[in-house]
Length: 316
Ligand code: TXA
Ligand code: MG
Image 1 (cartoon, rainbow, N blue to C red):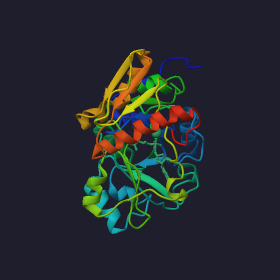
Image 2: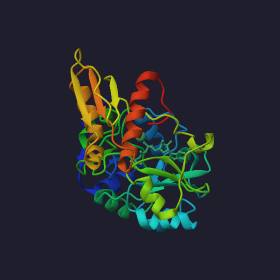
Image 3: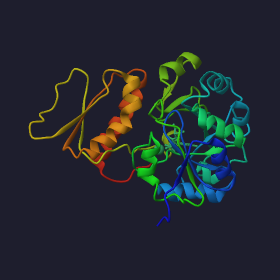
Image 4: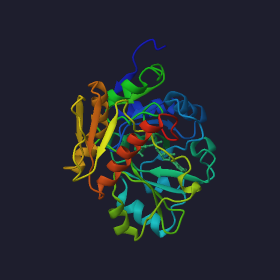
């Protein structure tokens, strides 16, 4: 299907040019790699969906260089928005806000809201500063797979679906945080946590007071079930619980119970490595329900649940 391998570069200027020409760029962020297109180019944005094999209608997060630019795409005028944006950006926080009219339906899946964030990775910062506008970027994995946290993961997942004539992978090394951004819906009062992620809900609550758990169908639209599932059977072990009987299994243990920062950084690589090792069982030692532990617990719980369900997910 491809004539030559997809190009890889560490030059943000080259990546900006690819975006200007309507191509896709896999971008490093501090959380996971994203698959980016210029939001004002519908054909390019459509190719994000086909490259990921993601059903349209699943809204995309848009990424900008700083708050002033963000305000052109989303209503961030509320005190809550201003506090979160000034204290947490650049960083692993996505704000779900009322969209401006210029945000196209293909990005939001027709919703009145848009997810927006300012990523902290220096290469995506440089790319966005040079680009000057907004780029839509979901995680750069095929729909239903674990998010990529290295350029090699991107090649493994979507390398064959990118167009070497038009697209590029911007290699910024392994992602520092390793799990996706925290998503906060600021259109409700109080704000709601839609996805635990790189910034803890404790930190958010310190900044803006109470944050509710997501509730109601409209709040969870497009986010019903996440696919973070390895192929190998995954068993979760809560702190203090005994290990399962593994006498008949070859086991790969993922220890998320000790150093939460390290566990988040390595989680998706570990899930990939566990599948590649072709063991019969993955045992994840669960972290406590605090800080980054909540994001880890969310991904691992969904991964284990997805296996039981064995079918379609709503999020990619
Ligand atoms: O860390 C991250 O957030 C990464 C990096 C690349 O920025 N991006 C990411 O995108 O995780 P994605 O598309 O894999 O996950 C975004 C989630 C999806 O569950 C999507 O349904 C939800 O955010 N979302 C985005 N915009 C939304 C909206 N307007 N309303 C409801 N949910 C929305
Ligand atoms: Mg994703």
